Amino acid sequence: MRIVIAEDDALLREGLALLLRAESLDVVATADSPAAFLSAVDTHRPDVAIVDVRMPPTHTDEGIVAAVEARRRQPDLAVLVLSAYVEQTFATDLLAGGAVRLGYLLKERVGRVEEFLGALHRVAGGGTAIDPEVVGQLLARSRPGSTLSRLSPRERDVLALMAEGLGNTAISERLFVTEGAVHKHIRSIFAKLDLAPDDRADRRVTAVLRYLEDPRSRG
Image 1: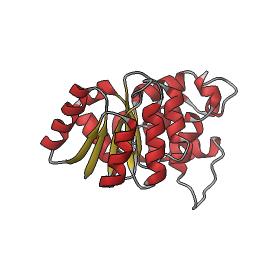
Image 2: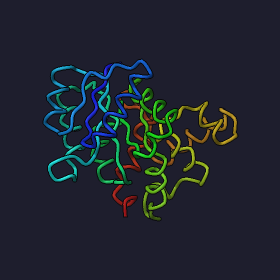
Image 3: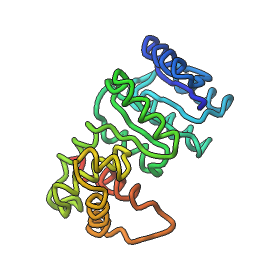
Image 4: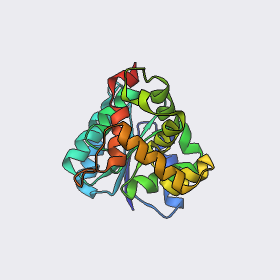
């Protein structure tokens, strides 16, 4: 796995590089600015980019803008975005183009090495990894008129874990229910969100995006 890291905090940037190299992962470049990051993507054609949301010069959305541009240049690039805070708008801006090979984690998650590496591998493998805190806040802010109001509490739990990138087996283990029960909940979620079978779209991804992009869920 070839990785580029874009992070303007030198300590975190080098710490991430050391952590990943210790796991025998190939960090091909690190960058401290959006321009340097995009140049590294063009030069090295990495499999995964780890990008800070807030980067120079204004430390607002430069990282997200650069990540979107990197995906435009290299559509198969997996992107794992790191943020110090829950910033739902930035998360949904990145996810708007489709949730395949994308992750959004809080920086505090990096300290939980197994969780961080699990999310990295999930994203690199074509899945999603949305921070539980982001998912929780979005669900908590959903309003009665949104499509989420159709879901039962258990279905909302299942959808939240789907957003984190978990498969049916992992969801069943987390919720202490059978895989059959998880499958039934997911079928019900698809029905309540009006997601008919469609070979052109992954309904799991669509279901996640449906509430992540719902403006009513962001208050």
